[in-house]
Image (cartoon, rainbow, N blue to C red; front, side):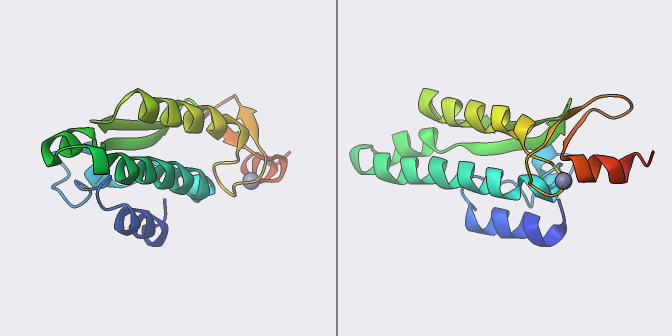
Length: 138
Ligand SMILES: [Zn+2]
């Protein structure tokens, strides 16, 4: 992801991306969000929903329970054409949100965010028709 977009998400959702500024050898998330900008909105909506849920839930939890529930991203990347969002913490509801976002990534162009589909051959990526044409001129 471009540094500006990466910083935007990591600043806005600083609890989820708590380890973003750690040393690169300590955690993969220190390398940043390892996917293209087309998934910015998808990741943004995912983080928004996760953080909203935590903030809502936190009123009924002790601060220790709250700390355990707060997910912290370990790695965000593209693998085999799809988004992977690895966290520590969270619960089943958050796992469900992540599962939804990961499956949706196979329908969204990783480069521009338009409707896309999985392209195989060489690198496996999820792209729209026009970005795919750009990648592989025929
Ligand atoms: Zn595209």
